[in-house]
Amino acid sequence: MEHVREVALKAGHGVVDHYAETAMPLVLPAIEKGLYDEAWRIRSSSVHLLGDVLSKITGRNWKIYSGNATVDDMDEGTGDKTSEAKIGEVLGTERRNKLLAAVYMLRSDVNQSVCVASFQVWKSVVRSQLHTLKTILPTLMDTLIECL
Image 1 (tube, one colour):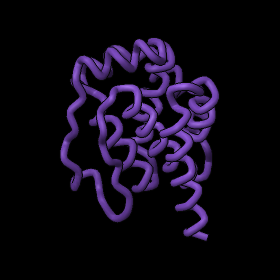
Image 2 (cartoon, rainbow, N blue to C red):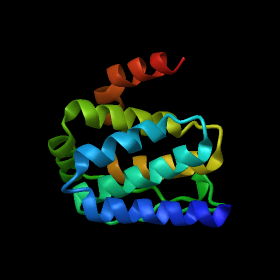
Image 3 (cartoon, helix red, strand yellow):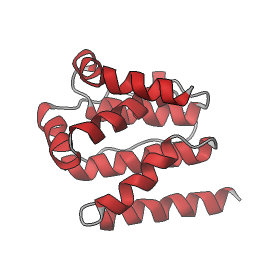
Image 4 (tube, rainbow, N blue to C red):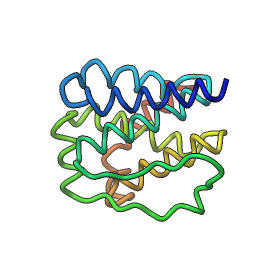
């Protein structure tokens, strides 16, 4: 069964690689929905695919590691001002804030795989954690309340 999941995730990566730029309105809602799924494997895959989408938008290439890594094992990624601006420009401020709020929340997920992947996406995109949290705080609070 695990091989089927791996192949499905690789297919998802292929879809993002080929269609993220041209079919963003079709690809992104499915990924967003998966971020809040009850099944941890779907949340984990959705975070990986979101990382791919954001990588495509920014033009930066980063690797989201799977496996036995922990948050402490990861080097802190460095987002930059240009990347943040590109994401906001392509997705719009509201959607960017919703996605970053979801990624920030998933850093505290009960499953280590989801936690590590979301930590990596966060650090790869965000330049200043404090500044970004101030920016997304209203959206983050609304999202947390909705999830209760």
